[in-house]
Image 1 (cartoon, each protein chain N blue to C red):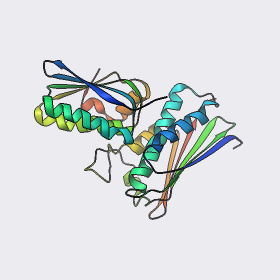
Image 2: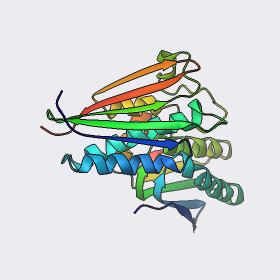
Image 3: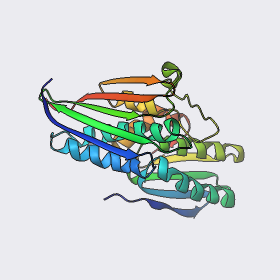
Image 4: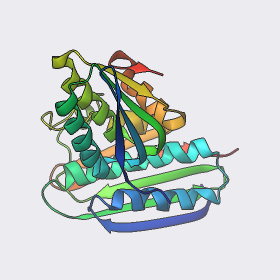
Length: 142
Length: 106
């Protein structure tokens, strides 16, 4: 994969940084000439992943979130969202639609479902106590 | 630049309340929006609550939590939920969630 551009953004898990992550990834994608719809979908997927870091990984604490992206000459973008938070005990279960570890809160439990729908490939690697990395791959132009 | 704007809530009579949402609906902003709409539900006990998304610029699944939560608030008082004006990616997120099972989409 020949990389034609890349970015890395590291920020604390403050809720106001959800928007920062969306704006940054949108700006990165714009030069790659995607459709408005593709930008909107990737923004939404990244927002879901960052929200998971804030709400779950660093629940009750603050830690760093890294959003990195690489654009390849083949027109694909690889986006990685990494935290060093609590990790996920059961990734398969966490990815089930409507599953939420905090049903008392108004969370839809659809974060991973949205990420899956808006990417061509989604991988989630997690180790309890060490953190989680979500990787989204999407072809954005021909 | 998108900014967070509190919902404008209008009582249109005949038991109908409309909440006009705008800006970004994400985890950070959903709580404030929720608070204002719930205040109106408590006060007016509407037969119909219309959530208008036509001015919403961004929404992730936090917006789905918002819709599902209002459905739960309305159900005990026999209220009906209508979701209006959603388009593009916001509408796709609603379809992923199956919102049409809870609310009338117009």
